[in-house]
Amino acid sequence: MEYELSVGLEVHAELNTKTKIFCGCENRFGAPPNTLVCPVCMGLPGALPVLSEAVLAQAVRMGHALHCDINRVCRLDRKQYFYPDLPKAYQISQNEIPLCSEGFLELSGDREPVRIRIERIHIEEDAGKLVHAPDGRTLVDYNRCGVPLIEIVTAPDLHAPEQVGWFLEEIRLILRCLGVSDCRMEEGSMRCDVNVSLRPVGAAALGDRCELKNIATISGAVRAAAYEAARQREILQNGGVIERETRRWDDVQNKSLPMRSKEETADYRFFPEPDLGTVVLPEEQVRTLLETLPELPADRRRRLCTQYGVSGYAAAQLTADPARAGYFEQGMAAGLCSGKELANWILGDLLAMRGLEPGEPFIEPERLAALAALTEQGKLSRTAGKTLLAALPSSGLSPGELARKMGLLQENDSAALASIAEKVLRDYPVPVADYRAGKTKALGFLVGKCMAASGGRGNPAVLRRILTEMLDG
Ligand SMILES: [Zn+2]
Image 1: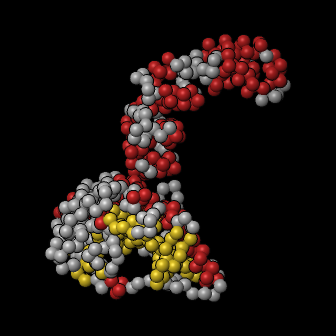
Image 2 (image 1 turned 180 degrees about the vertical axis):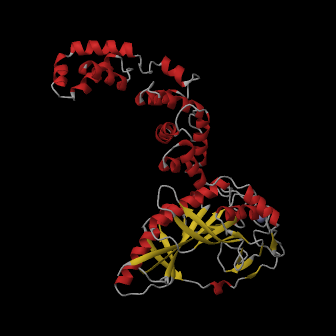
Image 3 (image 1 turned 135 degrees about the vertical axis):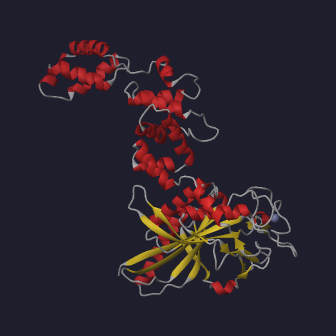
């Protein structure tokens, strides 16, 4: 039997607000353990939480970016469970009425577009972190307690492991574009749960699902979905049934392992958080947050294609990093070269020399555009362009001046090139005869000789034309 894969994701992203969600503690990664804490985030008796307005605003912006309904009246709920990293023994989250619901994300670009429904986005607090020391002790760091999170929950609309990666990459781009989260996965600021089920192709109801918890990387989520799909397929093909359970993804062994049987929502004994009232967002504020959204990555990709004529692939590569796309557009504003040529230089050589990374030699976008103009106009060969690029950061000269000084400019002067060609034709009668006898390959040899005679500066296209005219004429 053929099975269809259905994957739903729960993406947790830490918001990069200055302070935590319910107290004034600094929200920062990397501080010494238990230094960014207070009675509120430690859950000491009598301490009362106050909801951060910045958290609400950032979550609403993400809701707008994913075309969600914003529930202007919503509330927070207590989700009760015990774990050593959770000093209050409950997490303040949102259960019945999330801040945002019923949205979608369209995955487009140079692929077949797919629309993934977003069921909800809610706000909640993060828990602390257990640190397993080499001597076998387990320590707890409460700095992360109360760090604001949004949880983005999708419908089970992803039907291939690659789509999981594609979706997560797009979500990460949007979060970064909005400045909502840094999404530094190595710091755990974006992580996800992957819910996987299989059903016979054509069946209406979803199959029983397994949830893979707390996956820290996009590639891990893709591999986890692929592994879990294969595991379930084998069970079903052998006549077995899928146990609903929570599984742990082991990224080193590249497999999922049983963790616990799936808890039901009722196990958490959710109830409205009594220390925080109903959340009411003014309509005006919600509208302003929508109107002030920046251009989203998908729109920027489309615009780069139409405005600058770059390919869909190049647009996606440029937009993969907002700084990269900004650099490209600044270069284009100089009006010196085509988008295609500049994109080639950025995505090829500039990235290879880590030219956009902090601490690396920087080339102003206008100067790279000037270099691209030289190659585009045939004044500089691609190879000479690479030499020039490497020399640019340490030079105060413009690309044109530097190319002249380094003797890199191509010789386009037809008269000068024609005299070189005449000499080469006199010096090499055998290939000339070969060419005239129909061995057109001999032309390449003659072009090479002319290039050498010009000291590598002759424009090969011009030389080829001149030689052909002389030989055929
Ligand atoms: Zn605090």
